[in-house]
Amino acid sequence: MDDSLSALGEQDGWKVDEFAARVHYRGADDYYSIEYYEPSHCVLYWKVKGDGDVAVPVGRGTVPQPLRERVRQDLDAVGIDPEVEARDL
Image 1 (cartoon, rainbow, N blue to C red):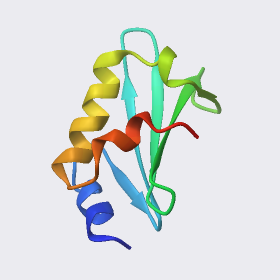
Image 2: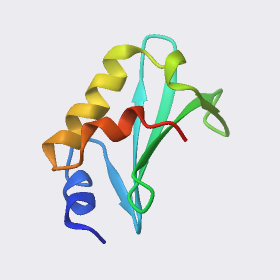
Image 3: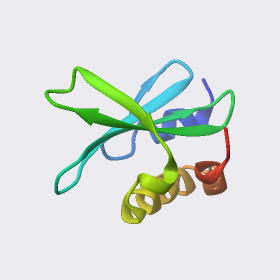
């Protein structure tokens, strides 16, 4: 596991599982799961529905800007290039 991935796991709410880190955020009406994958250096956003049993991937354009900024700040704080958040998959 990369040191920066371990450090991301120490950020508020982030959990690490081998080669990825995940965090959950609840907005006013929406619940998101965000995943960072270290091998491919990419961020995926999932919108969680109902009681959490269903999650669908969503495009960055549908994610609230303050949430995207928070993810970039978390990545930057541990030495991961925050520009990976905007990377096209």
